[in-house]
Image: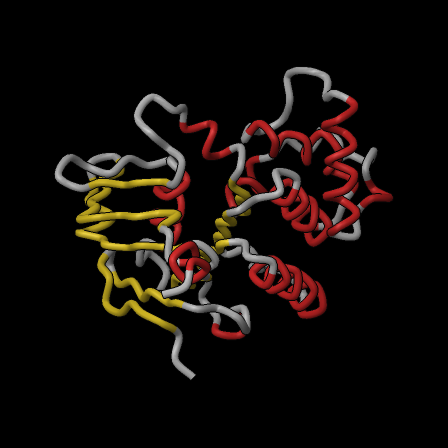
Length: 236
């Protein structure tokens, strides 16, 4: 194998025998998943199948129960989880519903650098410059100083994609990232995701709909009631 092939197979995320409990409910059962650098995994399955819980577990919002394990590239014992989050882009419904609407667009994007909801300090000039670059990549630069309450649903979603982009992520976690969007915006954001995959970014995304799969998706995992029922490379 070439050196490039070996590098491409380096795991970014690995779950082994992972069980996840939330408020006393056993939500994920015995999950095995290895995501290698540059892959795009699509998680699919019915409502309640565990897709969002799995993504949020990968991000570190839910813990794996004793007996299972989760490994994240570059995360040795003692390294704060915030270090992982600060280089991982996340777009998820709880961000859109829970983000305070009085925040400006630029501060919302800067918050991605700190994996926080909002800011309790003034952004630096360098942070604001990076935020403007991310907004430009998503076509939202002219809205930098508006508040989220001034924007449409679709515009807020673009801002959340810019918030994910601002960290220049090597890993993108997308939870139902196209839900509620009209067809032109969905196509535009899907093309952006495809361009990130082409650039070597690793992607794990959850969706209900086959039309939302990136054309360059490499792997799929189907979940049902918190269990894996299918996993492997995307077929022709």
